[in-house]
Length: 208
Image 1 (cartoon, rainbow, N blue to C red):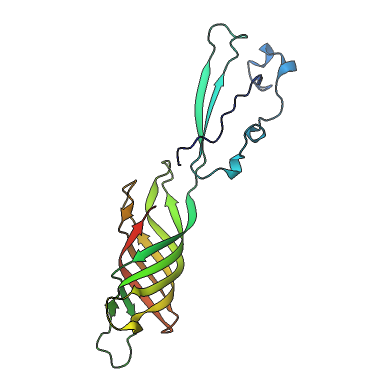
Image 2 (image 1 turned 60 degrees about the horizontal axis):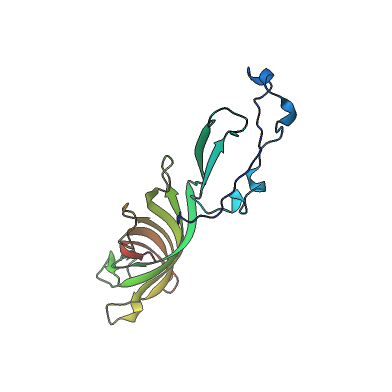
């Protein structure tokens, strides 16, 4: 994913023969054949289970030129460590959220209010396209904490609160962009006000 070379290994003298049921089996000397399965982890420094997501194993298999006439045959293929879903912790800055909760008695605003810049720490799931390499879906789902009105635009500090929230977000699909403006929608529970609320609005996401 970061285009880093982790390991390079050349493995010599591996003899692989066709299976017994193969029509070519009678033409091979099985005395030199490898009968067990080939374990790549016994040769490389980092086991495949410890590689980062979207790591790529580039494998080249070539004939021994001394045993085959001419240059022999060479085949290359890639093995990509892919996942359908990944999990990560993200800090983002939802701004201008419209929060909707049960109105207080005597209030003239039955719907909600526009908040200032909030800070959210969310453990969220990222979904990937099943037929493409490292292509994210434009949506994420997560849960965590949100500090509403952390940077308050009004003189009333009572709007500040901490909430437990389930949050969905829509992200632009443009790659390699450091600054994006996702759209958030979700619901949660305000710990200070002790009431449920819903929210929707834009946010700011910075990739370092």
